[in-house]
Length: 341
Image: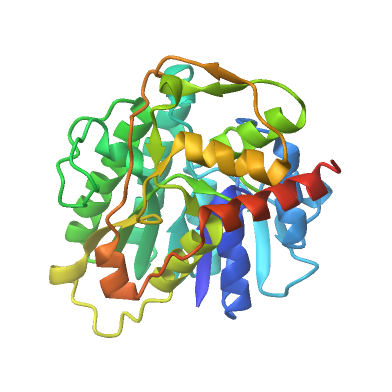
């Protein structure tokens, strides 16, 4: 298949692109390479895919990978209402995997406009292109943040998600509603994936795994919010990638648009881990104890996440099996190599 991966220089997009190439698919990746976090990390991911920084920096240039004849990259944002349809017309994609978004719960309190531009306007552009260029299947990133103040544990996709506590979460809920309406009106399949706290090598520097490791290595105190009384369904990147790719490879030969145009799945580790236990795993692996600044709860944050992934297990034989110890060990090994620690 020929697959568009948006956000290909991002954490999950990078891994999904790699795995699709291993499976023999043709992949076109796009990314606007914004400066929400260190752009050098994004360029380093692209280099792993065979695209140099110099080539990737050129706006709207179609760059062929030097490592794979099946991968090419275009620096472009999904907000680009003019260039995005041109890309769809030229490439004739079978499937679209939309992982591009303005990420981050806390940043949405500081720069809400970025979330409207990327997560709402950009997503609408993706839907319009899927409609106009006869895309068979749109797989897109939602988020566990849509559950907001939900108190029922574990979180299930049948739970009410009408009380988001951040603009980021509200935009992700909006994506699900928009996808439902477009799939219903225009007959293409949409699958939304509510990601739960993804971590691993090449991970985002604004996420807990990276922040804790970086601070401990440098002998700096770590910020522990809600005084450590938090739990997260930490999910290793390989498990996430496996699930996403299985869905992208769905056989749609017997697809019935009236019955199956809209699906939502949780994609997580199906376990809730205490934040203090997660920190302990990092300390054990580094052989250093963190100095901890115990902080109040952050605005827009929630106390606990835990994914019920039964539907994904049943429909796609999804099987997350990476332990926290293994995942933390792998991340720290990458961190030390990448930063030459």
